[in-house]
Image 1: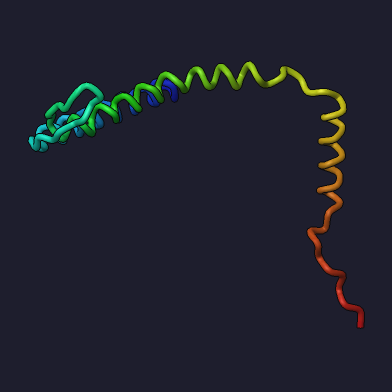
Image 2 (image 1 turned 180 degrees about the vertical axis):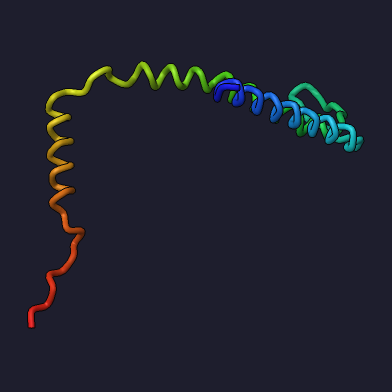
Length: 108
């Protein structure tokens, strides 16, 4: 099994265990609560008040991750300017010359 396949299997197992946990949570919470909406009040089980927003947030995260990756990839330039590369070389040279702020050894 390759790394990509094992990652997909692990992700599937995590999602399955999460859905199983949500199902057990919903079965365990039979308490009715009032949810106030703009057009009235709805009585729902406590579990659904927690489960529905969680699933919506999970779905939004799954949808936004590829969009964010695409946005970041399009914002990064393909190549850096020569001046920026020169600045990196200067920075590396200064770091190599830096003694870390060590004081000279006392003479005596």
